[in-house]
Length: 293
Ligand SMILES: Nc1ncnc2c1ncn2[C@@H]1O[C@H](COP(=O)(O)OP(=O)(O)OP(=O)(O)O)[C@@H](O)[C@H]1O
Image 1 (tube, rainbow, N blue to C red):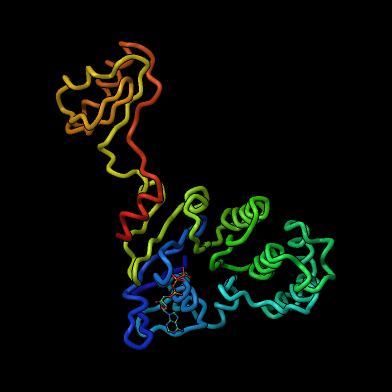
Image 2: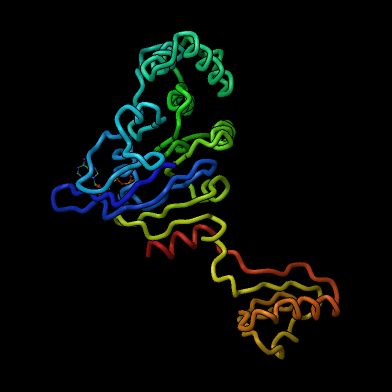
């Protein structure tokens, strides 16, 4: 597990990170979201040791993250860091070697990744001759080539077309299944909602929400939605709930007494077909807006 604990970073008078603490757990994909300037890139740079913190620490499986272990973390920096004139296969092999792979293994991994990312035919082309989206695919390959123990990816999906997003998502899911903790930042909340198991929301340098996407979007679990074919107005006479809204067959209500929920379902079924019944979920964009207000 990757643990970020109490990270604080100042740039002059500006407090960019204020006691930032969260975990990136193996077998789970963690989304890192926050408005422009919230401190995501700064946090990721500190994790990778590119930038120093004023206070706090980064731990890997309980131990302080050393430079040696950092070498095994896959990183996709915001500023992207590839060589424009170098052939893409050569540079991926180079990065694999830099991180300690044997020449054979580096080549094997490179060709597998190029194949998976639909770039096998471009293997001997210089990076700069590729479209920006394809350059980004090479960038993710560079983060993955050395079989990293954890992945820290700064905006890996920005600028990608839907097919490239899917190819990258498949690759990342394989890493997650192999118990590699994955942290990625993104402004695309729909993508984050689709992909992530866990979420960390940063606002002006502070963690303002963290936890599983399921928990964060469960909202107030006492608010229920009922959708029936007939009129749901009868709910107004039920004790133990507070009706928020009824429009035809659709009703939104708060359960004040836990036991009443199943009785309502039975009553609704006895009156006709029930199309929907359960706690109301909150869209991630609303969770984000609420947390960063
Ligand atoms: N090298 C630096 N010198 C001075 N200020 C910096 C430096 N790097 C970051 N900052 C400031 O720290 C704050 C956090 O920036 P950071 O790039 O980490 O945010 P972010 O969440 O990644 O934003 P974005 O979504 O726009 O990429 C910002 O106010 C930024 O201006």
